Length: 471
Image 1 (cartoon, rainbow, N blue to C red):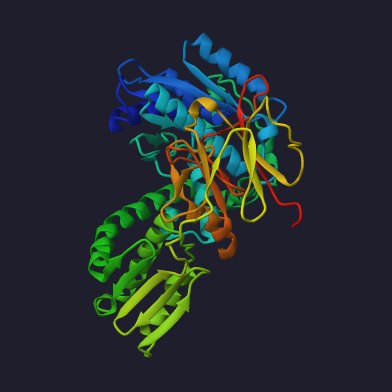
Image 2: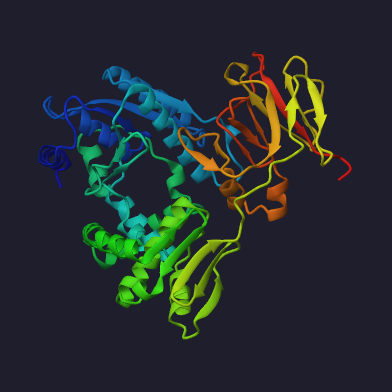
């Protein structure tokens, strides 16, 4: 396949962007993203958008710094604006490095897009990535919508920016051949051959077997993805309309269904109604959805007994009462206000009712051994705080920003549920907020955006929490 000509035709036919569009290209330095960058530079003026390059140096390989410098020079020679971020090794987690690296990348891209006004993030995902993604989701039991794989285009954040993948119809082999023909320089990531990573095992062991069975498997999977996406698009309005008629109550921790109306639909639609409802609960609430839940609830509904109860998770249960089904969360939203709130004075430790201590200090005045295992701490920028700070228990509706996330906030309740904190410990958890009501720290569990890294050459605040050593 002549990628250059096909890419040009696609840009003309589908109007991916305008010459005035502001585009950010995610470029790692590997063959996929370097081919994408080369294709963009070769577009004629009437089809070429205004674009820049963003690169994250993950510090995961010995060549990471060399790749960053190569890309910087490459873009400088071609007068392409270049943005980069280095993820220092000291910040790497001990586990979950893949997920953490992805979070770092997309947080950085989001920051650049917000600062510079980019409307699209363009990545170099290709057809082999699509095949791998669909297979992995199929094997682990993804929901039906997940089997459509990687979208050509989807929303990126709340600001209506989008992620766009114009290379999905091309194979990895196509990109490698293009790089050979047009002498596109790139770096080979040696970790791509490590079988430690799930995707690499599919890439090196499973996909080659499937391609031997049918060399056109990539084309078939791309067609499957599109057909399934088309069918789901057509079915969605039908499901949503029926769901509106069936659901009589939709609250944060309680959903009620009219079973008489529900039973009028075909079994296939009943299954899809519950599937859609659970997906909504999973996205909006604390419900951990499993595919088996659909059949379990259907069994409860068709059971001839008029009443029944089904425990779906630690908090969520389904209750059947004659012609009504209620999905409810046992966790109570209402939390009593704490009579032991504490206002923190600067450079002073205070003792909490549980015997633990907390204090706010400057880096120049603190006189504590911060390396002790009983001490937790975060660093704060004095210029971004509204004093005084207050320590209290959580309250109904509390939300906080999350460190490393740009625009999102999350319910305190959901943070504690996600970390599988017991009900007793949830009620005993302390948080710190400033005078403007911004939550800075859910102590022991989560830091906010206002938590920063330690800088020894600057005066910072240190918020210190010391556990009672008697326990």
